[in-house]
Image (cartoon, rainbow, N blue to C red):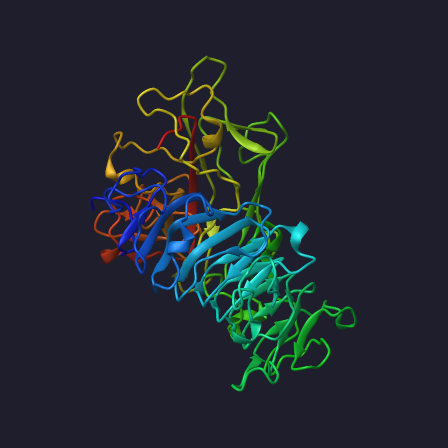
Length: 481
């Protein structure tokens, strides 16, 4: 394929795009400029600024879409409550919104698989308005929904929760100042004040809150929990639960759940965050090499340890980060590979790997690249200081659009663990498949090209089905897009 976008659309954006490009897959733009109303906009992997990168006033009333193609993070200005988002039937899919002081879900957007996070300093008072919005498989943190008609907003822009629908959503430290139309198969953490049921005399249609999980640690006496109709807050939801959710690593923004989570059978929470096993890597003491003897790579659910093979060249730790040990030679460049041992995935019959994510703080904002022809290897551009990208494409090659965070993967269907230091026992022998972080691992079996590569073909993609797998992470200190 001639480009590296996976989604079909009519307007393409990439961090490596040209300002005067035609916004096509082969020649995207770096921001939303000059797009027409109603277009289906595809956003390539990267960090974008809202509204600097988004002419959001042009996104309303057109029934178009904004869709993430890879990991897309959108940053707010950090101080404006009720900051306007797309409306008018526009669909937002797969976007993560951070550093916002509040949101304005105006005129009915449809949001799917998105994450909305308000800075904690603004969580204590109304910060987000809403009108006729639909949310599916979304996550909300510190969002204080209100009917506020202030802040210079015209009537109808402030929001009316009675016309909002939430399905399979997660709420953390959120507040509803009036009842939502529907709350279905959602989770409310102990610091959330939810409100569902009949909105009252303003609306004539039925509404309700069904099949939800209200965390048992919530204190209804303090207003936490879920209100039904005009009743006080409580832990009950019709046809619902009030049990611990068993998240894997919530403190790391990992919303997947453990195998025994009650959310699985009840269908609660976002579908993209279903059953998974979360592993965390704890590095050795500062200045010590990373290897099997002193690194800690454990599954959170049961503390099971997985060995790390000695890295070559060695990694050391500095300030909690993994650093390539390239010696003291000025201008030294290099690439290091860190491999795990065999990781147990399924007992008995093989099953699909549905999602693999990184919980790192990787900075992939390639709007600040070094020069490909003469990269500054001893002191890379500060905004590219940890981009895990070792692309071999020539400057300007379309395969660079957009960059993807990737890792290497191989797997086995044997009932017992194959030797992680040998090729025998692994499905592809000595071959590794490059896959994309924060996505379902897929590959083309005809050439073993994974979805972390620009020439991956979605039309012939297959999932990875296995009993064991092994990961390899590649780091380099030459950064350019």
